[in-house]
Image (cartoon, rainbow, N blue to C red; front, side, top):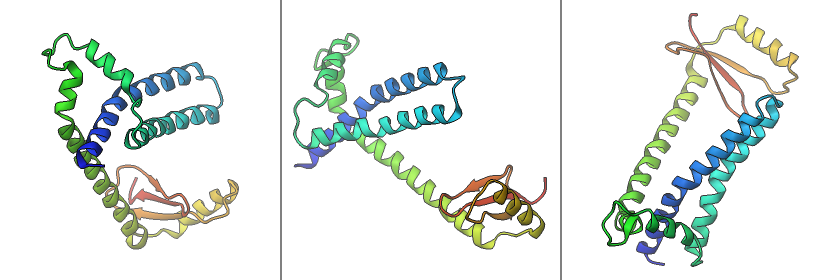
Length: 183
């Protein structure tokens, strides 16, 4: 498979995800509105299902495009071509997107790289804060008692970090809380 075909597959998957994500978001918002009186666990499950679908749908479409399935997204090209009244007749919206797929993929890759770098910087900050920031034995004792009341088997570490505007929690396996130095 050539680089052009890979960029083409990724580009059309991104274009299609613009309407797919909007559709999933609207359906999830509607379901959450209908479940406004439901248990929080049910609403959380619906929200997680919406997020999972936002990953699974484009991933499946990309897989089908890369594996050579000609039917991946063909119906949307018809919708794009039919909606192209304001665009020159050299392919309509479909032609416009096709000519700019490299830019679409490049912009997406640049944004994904920026977000990845931001996440890495955040993880490095958390690591530094977990090892270097101050401890308060009195507050740690309170956190330990709360953790015991909630039945948490693993310890929850409390760190006092200067410059935070609000308390922060972090961690999945090793739970940590960071608080401002003064309230």
